[in-house]
Length: 228
Image (cartoon, rainbow, N blue to C red; front, side, top):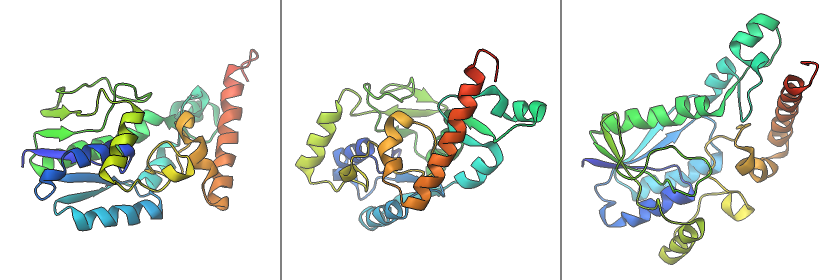
């Protein structure tokens, strides 16, 4: 089939999946397991593997990437970039969240699309999303045409549709989280991730809050009038 569906397990990609439920028997559905995904999310995806005969699991290695390139952040202190650390001898390393997502999710997804032979990809992007690419329905990126069937939907539209079709939401939504669970240790997207962090097991929550404290101090030091 020349069309594949990109599936994160989040509400928007889930809505797209149900929009195309009439062709589940032949639709390639691609999910990236980042290596930092929640155990509950792995279990959720195992359920989909049983329903979707062309389910494709792509694996990346986010933990190794973060160890090498640093924690993903919303605001990047210059002293915590690789160049900054090499010049000033300070740490820890930090990186833009866009870089981390690109290396561990977006690039592996695009490669999987090409490997599947598809020339079109269904993506659950909405125009009202706070974090979204500049692509719109019909945009062609490196030979792949992106289809965004819910681009004009509101968040309420998505949840209403999922209720109507009886879709099982991914773990986390019932606990007040706003997104899927790609990486338990994400230290960025804090406008979306605060509740997800609060819902982590105690040991993981303490570790993420420790990292966020260090990130906060580094950002404040960069912004201080004295230059830190």
